[in-house]
Image (cartoon, rainbow, N blue to C red):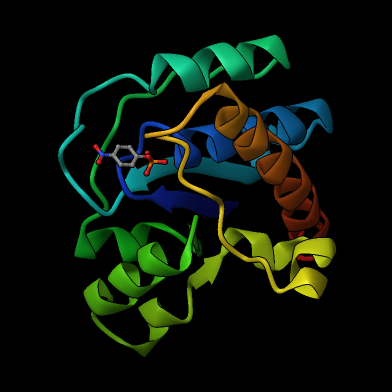
Length: 159
Ligand code: 4NP
């Protein structure tokens, strides 16, 4: 069982999108039993909220279901996951500051590190769509689909 948590700032836009995409990919390949997938925020403002309606609508149009409620990532959560995947560099910094030890710090990666094209372009942040228009939510989906495919390819070698 590989345990994954996607982490952004509020856990209502980017990380629930990545969670929904990853769950879809894993289910499609018949690998659900091998993965535990969650998402969380480094901040606590939206704890208990559904994903942003704009994220849910954009995801639904592509066949992804965003069904979870927001939670805040806590220090103790590092023990519950093997991979803690930050949406951007700020989220990564917050997670590294929260990590209790080197074992926990080694679990932190940026999601887009698993997408070869993003690595080549040196563009490793999932852009925050919260204060922008609908195109931002489509962009988050594009980025999450590419990165989750790369992530699954990487993790499949561990199974
Ligand atoms: P997320 O987007 O980190 O992708 O969930 C945000 C959601 C809420 C806020 C910021 C970003 N906020 O400031 O409330």
